[in-house]
Length: 427
Image (cartoon, rainbow, N blue to C red; front, side):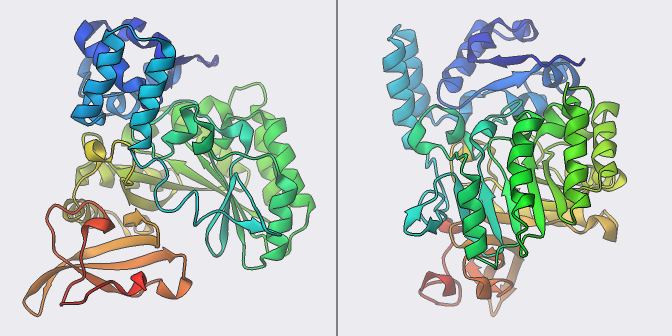
């Protein structure tokens, strides 16, 4: 398989692999796909999904829309306009009404993360943590396939005011010049590796040519290894892409792949393993991350297998995230205590080499909050937490405590312990 073939909403009910599903089930999927973006491809369909296990196969759930991803009243609202034969404009308007109710930009992405250069906001760039700036190249704001849980779903639904995108590399360079604390640039999206090599190279070479003394690391956030490993093997410009990676590492910069692997099966065929080897040969490092997802990977053995396989392939386990408070969080999220127990049990079964992973971590407005555990202190049952990253760096690794709540799935669900009126970071 070397030819990429994408499938989107118009193909959904006609895919022959779905013939085992009833027409009613297919319609439910179409309802959800009118709100959340749907896109898959021939590699995912033929190499990752076990169709004999559908509809419960974890890779099917990872990439195909499910009815319960919409709240009941949203599902009913969307299905009604489709059943009524409403116009495309009406369907789009109803879909957008629902989308705006799903917290499309959590954690201050549109306001608090927006950098300012000479009084002008830099749309398509984010700067939340002191050392790292995010860059959203406009040509990279799609993916080889979409994850059903994706917290960046607003990038793909056609609402311009929800989208991050820019081509202004010169403004990014000027901003980095003015902020010597920045050491890392993260190319993100979407997926930067959806771009042709010559397009990506134009961005990266401009960054290298600027000779920024403070720039140490170029990161690429990508799902390409999982959803289209041929990007590094047989695509027409695969060789040029690998040579670009060598160019970065030979320049003295660290090239870090922030690879998303959500289930061990994504690592278990020769194609992806060869792609990983080719990337490593360029001098780049691969770090791996994923949220913990109900229905897909919410079991300690799954995570232990995932981390062990990543270590075997010379990848570095990096983060276990908690599902963000956007989109279908109610479907994919699990409570914080369960997430911590899964992390702890999996962590206990891997060697020290695999214990580079950090989690469970919540990417909240004030920063990345790690759940350290549940404990009883002075007769009160509490969550122990700390910041791994923060807008205010002096908050990092400062322990704090929240009242135990068995139903809490996010920081906003928690209240301070020991009679405190607010958390220290709420000043």
